[in-house]
Length: 394
Image (cartoon, rainbow, N blue to C red):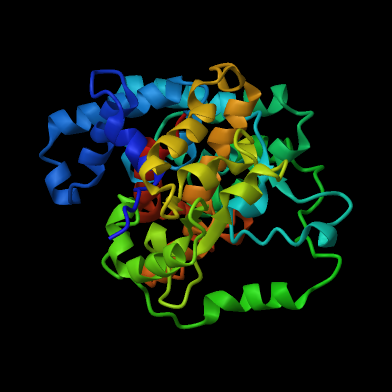
């Protein structure tokens, strides 16, 4: 039997110190509470306290405050006052951050040469959480009005707030006069129009039709929040075939939906050859755009290299954790952390994996807020929060 390595993200967490204040302890406190059944969680006051404290630690860290986008909405209502204050501060900080809108929807971002000249539609996604912050008393209508007036030159932000007005009105979250004052600040914005690609390829048509296909899950009892190594036995025969074809000193990195738990029996494995990655400027070791390739994969090697494989993997991944290029104030670090976030939480867990795995395809939040996808589902958000706490870090 050839030695198989766990994904680097798992090995890093296992080896992390368990002393108070480390990411391992934070991940444990987050997951212990979220793994409990709702009826059990009500009788876990200490675990509840540790959960909110752990989340506060992440929200206070500039590199990790984006966990705010994924925290279960149902756990915001009765949160401790200190958590609410920390959450709201992080939320204000994220009002200056825009993302590609489709990243938080179905991931329909078009091929590069099919994208409109104006670029892809963007959104300040934390603004889409406004209805819950108003409903649960995190922010008042007056505070929100002052924020909109102060940030009135940011059209993407104003448009993102405008997306929420109809939902707030229908749910009667605000009194009519308060809502009127807020909507008047976005009245002059143009109507948001759905973007269309410059051309439609067969590849895109096939991709659009993919969610409609019936699939047989490879690991129907998988835990989507990990550990991913538990899913390896279901496709180990495929890994052994890959190993058998490797040259004696060849190394490949293997990942994809089957490793992450929501793959179909006929899903392809994603395979990267290390030598080819090193020759690619966008994917060479140290590129923030390729961090997911090195961390969220299984490393496999030929006969002559297998005993050195773990050391090689550690040396390469240490570029992201120990080098000056990825110090705590680095833009490279921020980009790499967000790339881990998108690979684990968005592409393709949000876009197809969650619905495929759970069978749930209908959601209650309106289309203006891109609510026809799992983003607002607390079960998706529970899984995403656990993944973030455990695996989105450098």
